[in-house]
Image 1 (cartoon, helix red, strand yellow):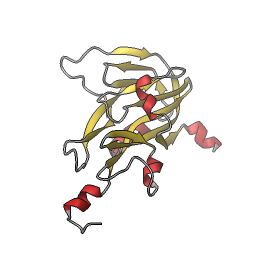
Image 2 (tube, rainbow, N blue to C red):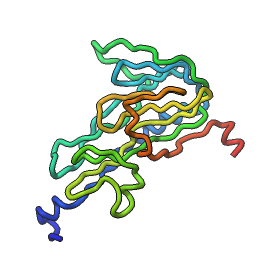
Image 3 (cartoon, rainbow, N blue to C red):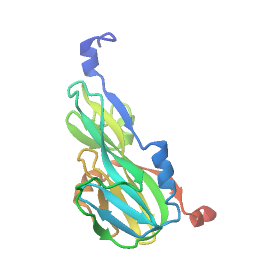
Image 4 (cartoon, helix red, strand yellow):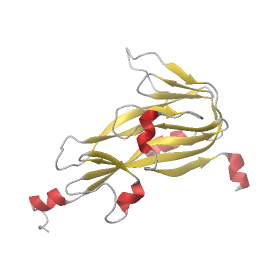
Length: 201
């Protein structure tokens, strides 16, 4: 083991970086409580959810992480906007699905992303000593990559894969291959229940 400040010791340490939703984004998501999902749309890199006259945008956002071997390393988190503005010249939105019913539950989807080399793992694994995608000099980010919605029409996941600059949606009864790498590697943090579910609890 080297001394603090020793370049060799710095190269050996594992860096953990939280990349989370902001408090304002959490507030935006909570506005979906008990609201209908009227339709989902995509422009190929973001997903737009229309609900009761409002539009919520789910966009990818690159965030830099500290990595001694890759100074420009980054991961991709989910950014949540309300009434997002479409960029000039952006491709037209294509409808992915119609009504999916009311929002019953919503959870934040998180995963662990190692950047040297890119590798996904369950957050609980890297928080356990000696486990997870760690190694000498490896940077690991705990990333909020998406949301899982329980709707009257079934479960829908809107997420990035943590590395690619795009947001995808896995719809009820359908799989999304570009999110397959998250399977078994995510933590779900409950954010809200429908009011009727609260009454039953």
